[in-house]
Length: 404
Image (cartoon, rainbow, N blue to C red):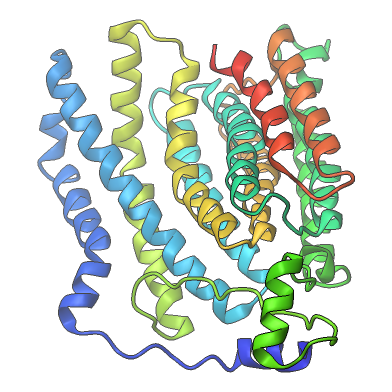
């Protein structure tokens, strides 16, 4: 019965306490992040003073990037625990906001630094949209489709996400390219205020709808997967229930990673694990700028690196959910795509207006076409029948030109 199932979800027995060694291992990423942050804010300035050696620069980058990804996985783990405590759709919202807050913090640190990069926010947002809508959604559908052939998904939730992602993406990344008030793909002060306000209001309206009036759009469908005829007959014979209708089955419980604390403790640890990522973003940006300049790589690579840092934990969580036949957690992917615009654009525009820092948002014509095709394929994917492996193949086809 659904009522009993929901009650069991809320009254789930707490996990047994772990030993000190188990807790130490689970929070080792936080400890390493704190130690690394302390080192880079004390003796680390001397390490970053001379970056002419590519070997030294590469060593510092691998160290920082590895520690930040480790901490990012810790952030997602604690956010996932809070998600289990609060339930959907608040769980997906917490996970998404926790991850995207890393992006906002990194970009804000770069924009407020001595040498701000006016194109880094645009490159990061575009990279996140392309990776999420092509790579993350494509691999999640492929993994689920290969294992279960066809999966149940609440299509109303996906369409709601795409209905907001599409206008926000065009407002933030396409319209500035065609404005005539400035020479380049930028915005005037008045335009920046209007665009930032519109983006924040539209995103706030979506969050209100997601958590109040239309919460059911973002919940996993209760319909169970029907077993094959042979397995159904065998199960009925073994239980003596031949001739009865199939009862609704319970979806598999999500796996829990790491020790289980109370909600406030998880919240404090989430913020504590997020802090090293924010503080280490400035030296990471310094290493990225020097590395790209010395090797002669395109500037867009910086946005791709930050996007992979932000999305790696969330991508892993979405794939694990697909393997457990919980395709609804693909909302993690769509939520990241929405939040990267709904949160990043207002913050970056506010920083640009207040500090008079240049900010370039408009995409070139090729990127606009890729963005349009990606959004079009995503709308088709989530507009009708339940997702299958064939839809994942279609999405992956959009990834080829992007990788080139």
